[in-house]
Image 1 (cartoon, helix red, strand yellow):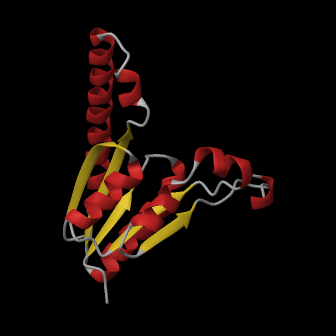
Image 2: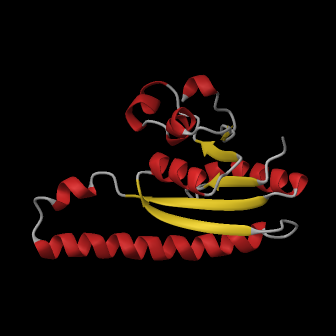
Length: 160
């Protein structure tokens, strides 16, 4: 079954570029709608807000909102770049935990395919930093395409 709605997840890094290119190619090839999501990570903020002075908590909320506004601007530009040859492109900017927000949006929008990039970390870096892509894969009840960013020149995946 050809996907009719494809969700591309971006953190605006160079590592998400191969996933974007693939999501756009698939949307064009299948005549699918492309949805693009960016999540402003709020992990840790609620626990800090519990013991912060009200003015500091307000400043933190303002920082999150400014970050969201900046991300929405970048999403608009990304949408315009991707829209050529695609019947519809919609963007979403959420504040929260990335895997949870991605899976929630995929369910709400009845997405047929989630395309997410990964930094390709292995070993200790992977254990310490975790993996949004892996969490999405484990919790989404729909196909997930994980696109690994290419390694730098002269760098093997064993050296990461």
